[in-house]
Length: 237
Image 1 (tube, rainbow, N blue to C red):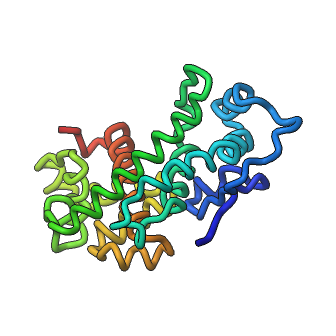
Image 2: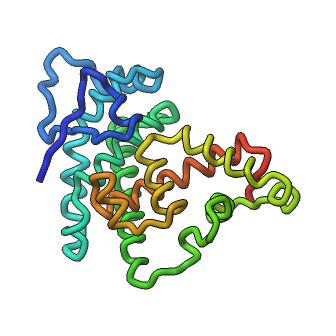
């Protein structure tokens, strides 16, 4: 098994760019380091180095908690490191909205993100035993796959927009995908827009199938936010 460590030299960059976010499983020596409150305040203010320090301090604890929660049924295609890589990406993306309420709140927050990622991965893996066509894009033409993806996200495309400006719908979704971390966007494009199966997407991204389902779940959440706030072609139902 490959273990990863958070890079202090370019903190946050790996997460935002969708690269494997390394995390050591031994916390650094805290001597002379800032306490949690100081690191959290700096991280929320946009200090990527502080966020990386927090992940180095608390990531090993979260990983240890997850290790016993993965069913033996899925252990061959879903490892703790899969979950932690996506969790670190989400932590960098969400840290500005984190609200520290009590001692240990960052660890609790990071654990919740990781547990949600595990839950979503397992849910999708179980769904594949009885695939439901409504859970992924079903379209013949490439442009139609963009419209189908938007509808899968729970939005509607009005008939006038669809008929008069189908290419603009595609452009709007392409712009939204550009705002996602690259691995999120790649997973959506390959799985939903190109119709590849999960195993093929996993091989292309160098990740496990479980990790692909986590990427898709988080990517779809972010696409909903982007399309709901910035697109004139879509409205949430």
